[in-house]
Length: 244
Image (cartoon, rainbow, N blue to C red; front, side):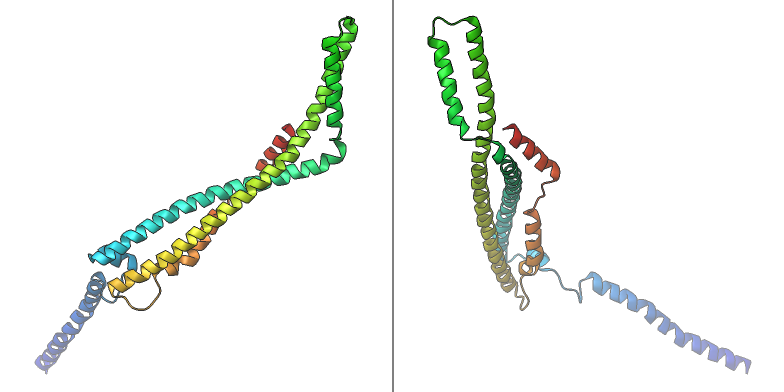
């Protein structure tokens, strides 16, 4: 009976060992399948990179050129947006200052002051018999007129500058719209190129990778278009306007 029990135990151990081996091999087999890419899909960019198909390589070159051109346009649009934001802030600051001061500035007085100054200068240069006190008095009056004219002319120059700034705003807005239109055209072209490369690779169905990325890409473009001007910038603009 003892020998019979040992034989039974040996048989049970012998039949158990293969099951244990199978349990350890199965995970190893799965890992190997993952390493070789079985069951996994390669990205479109990786398929393009690995392809030696001349048609695919030609399309890839076109895609690279489009992306390079698009990056350059993004740089342009950031620059235009920065300049536009500054001009808009400058327009607001100077317009508010001019509006607040217009009732206190007698612009119509400029012509009268210029005529008065011309008469005094003519008198100073032509009168031979003039006392030293009279000469000093005329020079003092001319200096006073110059001071009044300086303040009035600064205000007039600011009024004119608003018009120049608004022209700049219009110009930058047009450039922004034109650059944005070019970017949209490149986006469409990239979509077509990605569809063409999928066809060349024999991939059916689905949208092009670039078309899938478009929402995120458009959001990124909009963020790049909108640099901020802080309150310090506006304060500098106001100070600059007063100085002029």
